[in-house]
Length: 423
Image (tube, rainbow, N blue to C red; front, top):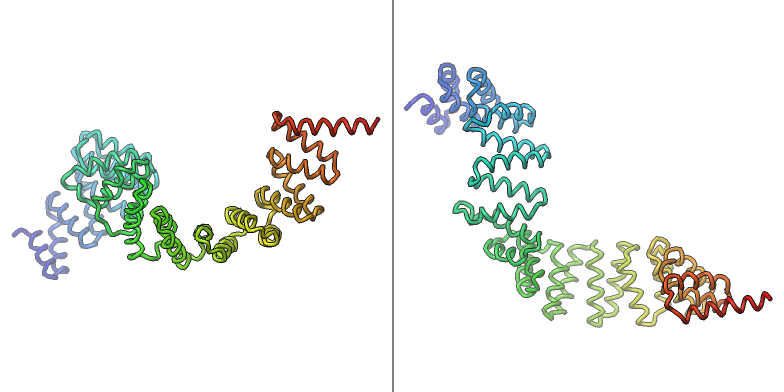
């Protein structure tokens, strides 16, 4: 047993201090290979300062010893001394047998700095040197995935999925399935999710989502029920699971799922609104109004919720609730002009004409290019005896709808009547 092996044996028996004394003494007279072994032992023991000093001495004595540079560069990288690591790795030339490893370490450093394009160029250079090295494919797959280039990532992960050392690797299969899903290749995504046999909630959720996109709703339900059972707090789940239930004709379960989701994710305005819509479909009118209003209470500018309530109140003939909604529950000034228009129409129907006029005027500022609004507004102004304003509005309407001859004729009659009066 040589001296270094003896030191290793002492470490294994808990006699670390004695071993370190032996190694320090041995390092003074050891050859380069033995010194590298000692440096590696220091690294494994977490004695980074000792390893760094020893490797620096080795490189000073033997500048062409690239393996020492690789080891020291890795220490520099761990210590966030990126510039020192890059300088050291760039000293390793293309003709050096360790050049490939230097490229990969450089890529890691650049990626850690956020210089992903530079990292990618180093990896691609490594790929050209050794096109069949799976670890390079792995690095390229991870980087292109991180860059959002899922098409290229899928190519690298697909190649790895055929490699005996990687084909059962769950990380590879998961990234490949996700890449396929993100480029819209749902069939291939489903194949690899099926191979995964994962119990990770994120992976299962994505698996269910792919089944959902392929309209395999029963499979989606089966997968998402597992997620719900194992991670009920997975808030993204409930709305999709409810819709999958609905697609399979299980509307009561869908509604129950939405109600459960609201207990988990109390601030999700979309969840409350979906529950309101389904409640109305199931003839739970009171719950529908309740949930829609809760959705609106979370965001009083949530136009989808306002529109749902507007349509619901209109269908129920509840003009008081509609007026209250658009005057007290929302800040109508910041909303789409259709809500101001809706309020104007409702007030006109209730014969509150002065307020209706005010809201028509406000709506006009946002809807002056909406032909349907202009026509209705013009007619309202005519009924209110505001011929001059009506003429201006209807002229704007005709510019948008020149084929509406009935309005054109009406406009012409108004103009002719005015001319007769002026004569």
